[in-house]
Length: 343
Image (tube, rainbow, N blue to C red; front, side, top):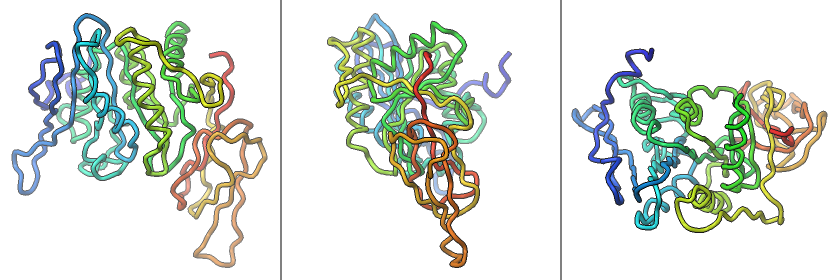
């Protein structure tokens, strides 16, 4: 049985009819009392494009506010998608955590939470929890496919990739892999994350939706290639599901196809052993080997102290490279992906 918090009725209100044919562009209004605004709301952009009979999909961006590619691609798709040429329903939330998106931050400036650790939410909780509860209880039960577009934000830069979780059902793995191949980023990474239970992807999986995410840039900037891959990927998903005309364009610049990779265990993550200034010696996508020098941790405030060398623990390719410069003890300074072992 669900607990009373997650089963409670949402406090969010809106004027959308999710079953109405046509295009609706509006807002989810999240109550947010503040100094100077006792009855204020935060308005989260949402579009519902309904072309009638067919599948239902959810596209999200801006779950982290410092990840911009999904915000751009999602908003552009919402404006240009014609319900007359659509078979099925598309729900778009291009800037899920709007306060974080406006601030260019990963964490929500209202409640200090990472939205992507808040699912399934709490109807009586803080801003992110209330919004997560609405998405989990109202939107996710409607859809068969969820694509949550991420980049690596201010702290990292990622090799352009889709991501998917490992699940025990081989048929679901096969269908999810096919969905990622249709999206057609250069890499698709099956990964075991550090803390995945409260993510949008995990919530969608609990509702039985086929689910992929992505990592399409980082370093706190808008990636030219990341936006291109995101826009093509969203169109490809709709084409692959037969929701719009055309065949998915799965070509890659090198003439190949999406490379299937995996982040299998914690050895794939390289953590900073101390606070300092990290100097990486690699770039995303680069091949590296166990024992090879990953970089140096510098202690600029302590002139007499030599930089601390940090070495890779396993062979593979760089999936995530650091972007912040200054790191704290326990921060990730690299994530290694390896060729998939048949998943």
